[in-house]
Length: 481
Image 1: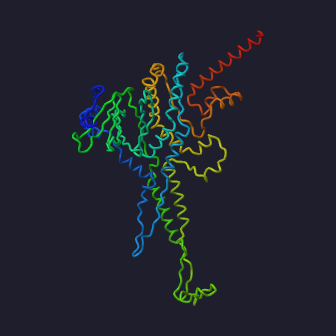
Image 2: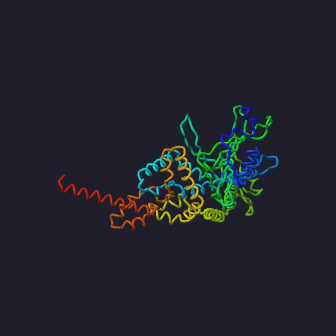
Image 3: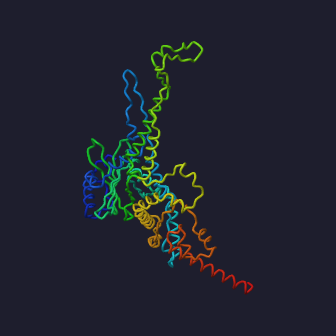
């Protein structure tokens, strides 16, 4: 262990090929032991990420730093600090409208001659996604990206007791990881670095950076302070897939544009609570003459003696500006939702909707669908990378005997409408077919169908098979067999 730490560069399983451009500069620095200098060349969004995390966590909202009121010769008067979880609400609604029903995958080239083999490979693809808990991991991935502005999925391939295994690891700052992407000028991901802390066998905390490229992995461990060989130990590993095993998402925080209004909403709640607290116990205002003439508390009776018309004896009521407060609260709520393109799904707003159709739900929440389309611009490419990376892992490591057929799969992804759910297209099509609609009209009208051309091919094939089966049945009946 000690001898290994004394090496600045560890064992290299295969000499890396010369790489040009910014990635080449990074790799050269890593192999020279200048890991910090190499990492500094990657993108660093720490400031934005930590700001988003602070706003997302109600315990670190600005209102929580509000000072108690200092009173002379008395204990400080407590001021209320009432944060609201607007950020979490908005982020969850955004996640719901994008991935409530998960991603639906479909095989585009299943009409080829190698149909059965392709379908078998596609079934393996679907089973692998299920074993990876793909939908739940992807929702966690999107939730953290909306909360922290960035998140990553690592497809970790390893062997456990000789058995090849694959799992998805979610990487985010709130989980203890530092994310550093490296793009070229065209926006292509050329390398990705993940920083984290680990403990060695002696319980010492060590800092690590794992740098992933399409050719090699570089595992960099910082040597202990005070060791004979300060610096970094670098071990390399050949990337068996030829693709960076990272899916990286970066987006605006889900509540972007409403930060100040959210703070104002919290401030109003807290000040209103202070006022209610201050006037919670009854307070009397009375003239001195009335006070002197108060009945003896030991005597029976509740008569207050008022000497003249100018004497005062009354309860103090809190300042009343409820209309102004209610109006401002209402405007704040509306502006927060509108600024973040979030529909109002409160109980009061939805209880009167009843059993309305999916189309009506879409129209009622149109603003959320607009935001959904905006998010698709970010995540479409990531899901394409998901499919491409999983196919390569299947072909290279998990099912190498079916490599050619797996790589020939053309897989497409579709977002399922949260208002429609996961209903089967066939039931909807059958109902419309009963009233005489053509296949073309049915497919065009069915909002569950995403790939209309493929669905038409399937319907025509189904019709042909049904006709052939009916013809065979007729022949059998006529011959008496």
